[in-house]
Image (cartoon, rainbow, N blue to C red; front, side, top):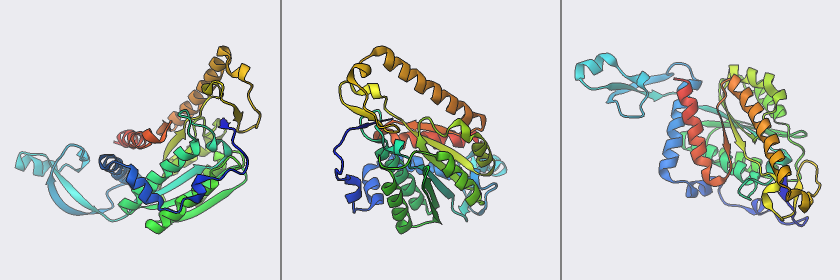
Length: 310
């Protein structure tokens, strides 16, 4: 986990932002991307709440992208065209953001930006989609020393407050990461079946969290978004420090090709072990390496998890 060396006491640009986070994310999103991600969340609604939980609204022609489970075969046979039964949703989707706020989340990302900026943007997008759909969103954020819980509510004011809480917790001065602590709190706090979206490091949740993952998966829908980490050998002669153990890495070591290969292999092994654990419990996951690909990656994750349920 690496970070750029910056003067102590330098102002944090995020702390000075006073504008609406939801308005800012809306300005950055293209409408087709928003519709795609929101449509995937519609698919999650039926996965989280067994059965429709809805009142019949109308009959309509089947269109590509509609759920084939809604096709009324008798009406389709009579009309000669595929016809679906549309329902009016009665309950909103209950969502929980489970965010790793340990100091490694403020390290460098592969594109040279910070993982904290990527994590903030991912959370902003989720909050924006939840607000736009009228869903409720709760927060459990924390690390080895802190835990923050925000009950599930809807509306702009709630989403803005929730996102600001996440914003203030992501920094290099934060305690070490402990996403297992966060997941354990989700497990004990939420009894209503929900869609739990975990935002953490690319080599987490750790293998030690397997029992918690197993128990969460039986109670909730679970998605994991991993924020990619930069290798200390990726920045040539630029000085970097390790976030977890703040020691500078000498240039002559960073320049060694064998060291770079060994670092890549070690990360690949950890990624593979975590990925295998998540696959055992059918937990869809995606790795986000930059803000620019965050929405596409999130939409792909929702699409894959939706297909896995049908």
